[in-house]
Amino acid sequence: MDTQEMKIIHLYDRQDPEIQVKLEKNSKGYNWEITFKGENADAVLAKIREVNKKLNEEYGGER
Image (cartoon, rainbow, N blue to C red; front, side, top):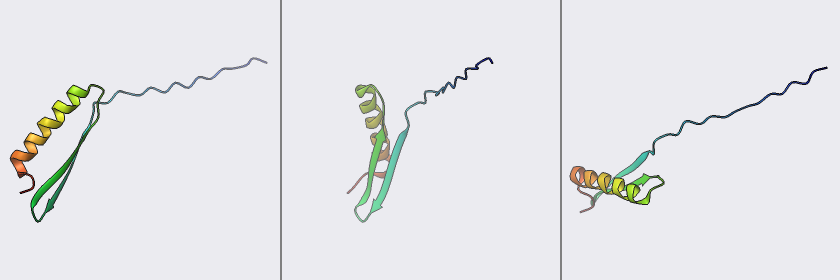
């Protein structure tokens, strides 16, 4: 009797990092939390600065 071999190969498509923003309105204005994951610390910090700047322009932050 022949033996058969079965192989299962899992392939995962590498996805781009995802930005998550949590925006809260309170009595003093707005607060937010930015989450961004990546392998390069400089690139991560640059992206967080960019998003934070846009949020400040749009919502002004806490007053």
